[in-house]
Length: 116
View 1 (cartoon, rainbow, N blue to C red):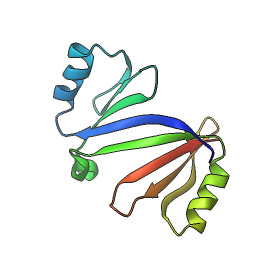
View 2 (cartoon, rainbow, N blue to C red):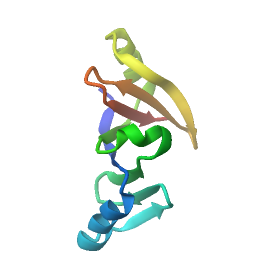
View 3 (cartoon, helix red, strand yellow):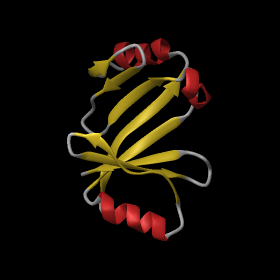
View 4 (cartoon, rainbow, N blue to C red):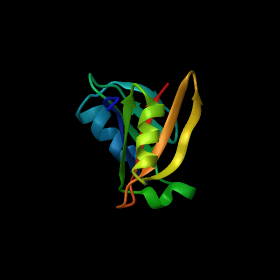
């Protein structure tokens, strides 16, 4: 399979500030980017992304999402479709030569696969 590794882990929460405090001040992870809706921490492995669960995303409060970095998104997406899996986004363009396929697991969570 063309999966290289986990690209990011996202934690959704209505209380972004409380989670930010733990990772930034207690664990002292370096912040790569932040605004009022998201905080992105850099680690030696995957990024840790804190996302505010409000509005249309309010139902995501307390959930975790993750994404994989892949070498061949086309082949991976085709394999998922052939296996009868539920695809929510099919190689959608993210810009900067990056595309994403989003798989909906039978248990309801979404998994992103990101590649060229």
